[in-house]
Length: 298
Ligand code: ASP
Image (cartoon, rainbow, N blue to C red; front, side, top):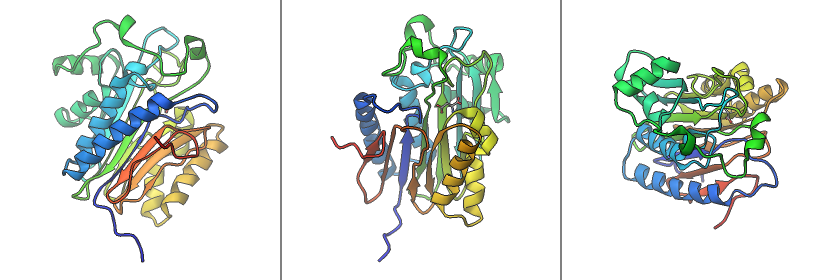
């Protein structure tokens, strides 16, 4: 007998930059707590859009991942934040790129979606918009930003990466996705990766919601999240649609991870890097937390 379709489902990621041998207990614990709140909210009828917004905002504020507070400076010495959010049913979408010194770039991205006719604002224009609408600013960047767990300033000049993202299906059948990052370590001033790009980094439509992590340059050139959605829409099974994108990223010389949830409530979280911090749950099943292959048990 096939399993009944879950009423709701979601997945979270804390980046595909996990390095084998490092200990991620703190982030796994954090993902578990956050996932349990997301589960309660979806079960109580929250929209997929509100849940992905909430989850990514919390991940940004925690300072535990390379996004929001945990972002590292670029090669010019300051943090530039990228974020995007998309609602599947309406196809409404918003994004910010190279935004400096706001606490919750994903909230600003949602503001772009809801308060402007545009999809993306970048750099000084994004700052002006965020100020005009009263989004919380980082008052002292020298003390606000932390480095992600297990990473030191010495690592910044290597291309390392990490990002956060969330995808959700709500009880009305709505799907949404959001992704946020400080980008790759040591990136050039003004460099923008896949994360704020609606299409490569974040995608949600009436069938599927997807958030990517990994080396943005390769994800962009592979087609990224929307290429998975188009394969899935044309009948390619979920796992194969995701694997084809990851294979394309690998062929181009990069690595990546993807989280996806479908309108059927199926969840997939594949990666071809060493590990990806991740969590998921669906109506009728327990929380799943992992960084490497094996599920973490608490
Ligand atoms: N995709 C992000 C970027 O290239 C980094 C990451 O996911 O780790 O900016």
